Length: 217
Length: 187
Image (cartoon, chains in turn purple, orange):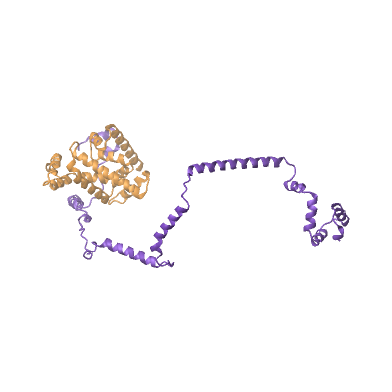
């Protein structure tokens, strides 16, 4: 680098007041710092170059397993599993008849053969059957829809209430017979006592409907 | 500073560093040659000696690790200044993140450190000048210091900072004006 007057000349050409200021660094530096600096750098580099302790640690396992421990390890585990399974089966609270499982395969086979003889296996085409059912279901849905729609239209066009129409369609004779058969004296008394109908009106009604008034009074 | 006659040639230093037998000796010579220049380059930026020492050690450790690959396409001292500048700016960024301060508050951190320096005297022009320099943005501070104190030619500075000579001249000019303004305002 050029340690001449270039900078000063440059600053003077800029008419800068910095040209008149001494370039003294006021910061203090510890005694002998620069002489000792190289030593600290070498120490740092040595630290940097020292291998990571983890990579030089021995990976030998100090623990010892019993001789032949791993040779039969799998068999031991299998034995333990079987023993555990058996003990779990013995703990089952339900009882099975003696020799049940011994004869079960033979009995199952016999039962299966008998079933074959009695009723040959019928193979049903799922696809064909399914489409048949779908067609019927579609027809049913269509009919229900038409029925409900028609009913609603008819219902809306009728001026009378459904119950009223039903009552109107019952013959008077049937009503009279029903009353004679089902209403007892107690009911008649209760109806009379709880309405404002006069005795005369009742008598007239009974006469018109053909009821024997001697049974009432 | 070592005597000029004892100053080893940079090319020779680099060549001998690549020889395993001469590596440590050449490195020691290199450190001795550049330690003070790089020290002050860093210290003018971060103010405190301890911080400067930490950064400088990192700089020379990087030099140790990478000097063997240095191809001498640029000057050795330009390469060293580049490493020192990058390490310093990285350290400043880390400090900013650690203290969670904005860029505008950056000057306050170093101004406070300046006030705590041994021998600080607000009436002395050299301390006022350091305060003025601390008021500059980081990269402008680098340019001002390299030009004003280290007298680095713009061409070498451009190579070191990967920017143009024109941009550096403009940056230095602005920095000088800011420093002047600070000094005039503090009178």
